[in-house]
Image (cartoon, rainbow, N blue to C red; front, side):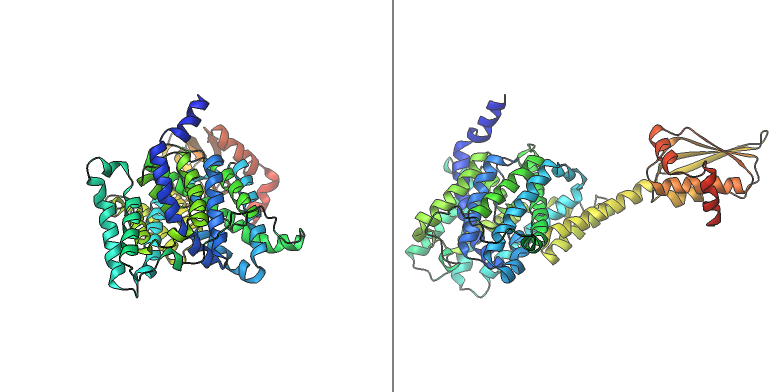
Length: 497
């Protein structure tokens, strides 16, 4: 069974994976060069990293068909390190980043993805779509009309080619777009920006290279403040992208294995002279839309990338940027969740606020981790507020026995504890108070403290208090942290009022 699953992952979609791998490799080249420039290093650092990370994650990663390489989110975090300490410290930081990510995989931190709500994922996707589109704007400003014409033609090929009979469905339209526009640009000798204008392509294969830095605590002090956020952002973007690809392909993936795979890939990149990277939502969407589904597509994307830049550099340099801009615009359009705009009318206000704030923070700061953190924080606060409203207290009095019974229903925790206290009438003169907790649950020390206050206030007013129906979990936390039945602690509490 395992053998069949492995075979399906690698050979279940050969033709689609080969063609999509070629398209992704072409799209990776300018991005890897651009991200190297952002980080302040030679273009070959990003290209070697993209090759190495794609190849290793294809084997070790937990999500078949997902593309990982050098990314903008990671490159932005490296700028200060490269400027102040140089390339060798960047390579050592990449190794430490990988080690942290492998550790995260063994600690099963990938499972934390279940705490990220659908609204946060939607906001993350929409923000990335906007960032992908914004990244193309520099290629479309202060240029000749030829660039606009080529970009428009590229979009026309991408969206119309699939409608052609037979061939339309068998060859990815982004690949046709790149080939056709490259032929036109070369034949007409158009004076437009090409991949060659982005930076010098490497002409040698990467070699094993241990970073030339001293293995001391001083080195650790320098690199750790960069490695930790790099590891966090890399894992966050990779796991979010894996979730999106899961949805696109209607399949599941192993998030903890993905953490380990990304870590091993970054260790490999650091040892081959590359920078740290992670999953790329844009290239992953290109891969899926071009027919890629298996691990072979990711492997070939890395292999084709290296072959093209090292051995076919003279040809690759002539590809017009307009062709790749058209492909990335297609990606941004395809990535954006257009349904989320329509759903603003029907979804709860809290979900809409979480989604919109995630988009705003990510686009404003270009920090994916910060945007997701804000989204998760807001979603948690809204959830806590919503759950607190489902807590209520009913009461009835037995006049014959002078007993008031309070029946508590719902979840008692930090958000509902004040409401819980306010539900009791402490001034009522009764001989006995029964608090029925059969349908209640106490979650934290704030709720236990609230129960203590209620019991002690009733006792101070002269009533006998009885608690009934505590479930085992609530009883455990109350026994451990409660003070209403501990005489030595009551004086402290009463003294504090």
